Image (cartoon, rainbow, N blue to C red; front, side, top):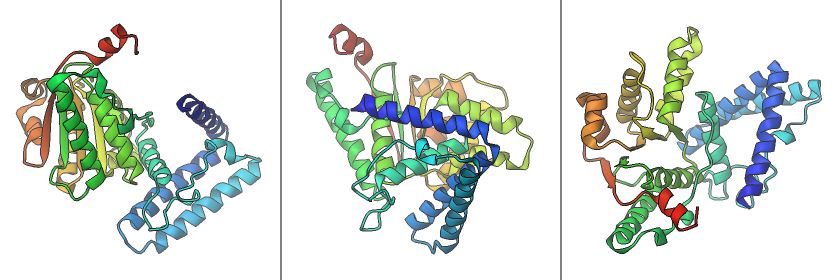
Length: 308
């Protein structure tokens, strides 16, 4: 089923990309519609009067429909064929909460704004405790439970940020992906990107001389959750990497927004690699949970057991 889902998404993504390249007016209309969806979702989630956002959404939808009619474009081919029984494809459940399907669309729109691609995320149901034994199994069970509870209870949580450290193949990215998947399903705006991909966003921001360049960083500083995977693997670019990372982290801390970071670096190495000032922002305060992953490389373990 997962393979079929990925195939449908790939076909839809390819069809959309080809149409956007062929029709510049469609690309502009799609961008306006994505921004309108994001603004409307935020307004509704915050309980604000969304009249202006609803009007903009209607206008953006009408503009895209007009462009499609003029160019004989069938936008149904841009989206995988899903039937969401939870919301009737309307985006909101009967109790007013954002549906998982709209949550994913909002997060995808936010990632598109800064030039990132949405990853395929694992879920907590994919967790396999049989890969561990003894005390490590109990520790992982507690960690899975703690992080799943966090995602289910947020925003009524004391912890706001997570830093996952440890050697490669310890399960850091997997757990972060599970968290991102559940939070997205709950309707929160989630950006999940590697440190290398974020570095490319920073370069775009620096090299763009237009008035609209702030859009590259706005999505990073405004998303409910920012997941930075494999911090320390990116190429350090002078006057770009550390400075912009510091700016994004600072802005998110000031806004009380959540950041989850995975890294192969030990805490002391993070401090040496980036600076004491940035390190203190990554791990400082009582609202950040530092989790050190130990054990064997799970990727090698799966291969030797014939399971991966």
